[in-house]
Length: 134
Image (cartoon, rainbow, N blue to C red):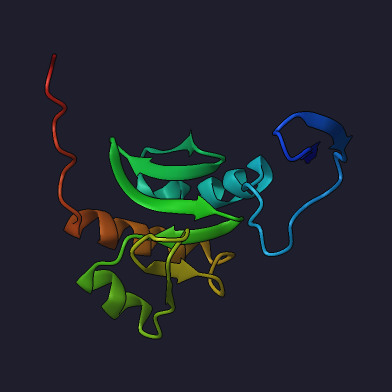
């Protein structure tokens, strides 16, 4: 964290640098160990990839975005069939201003359950829109 001090005219009169400073309640970027763990857990769902996006990760199957990993938490896009499969759904936005998604907490270590949720969700989610060529 870097902070500057300015006089009343806007001139910088001081600079403070503290690499260990962190604002409270600021989410941390997800770490690759957690991303690798999630990908290993859902390996039976097909060809799954993670793409880094603004310090967090989008989870894809054949270019179809179906989940996010934000602040070391797994979020799956909501679907009707996914809701029925989960039963006791916990929904939360993956980041401020986002639509709520299924927050997967308790079943992260159940690879079979998690892989089935991903397969069910992928079947219901629409195909990705084709990008227009410029």
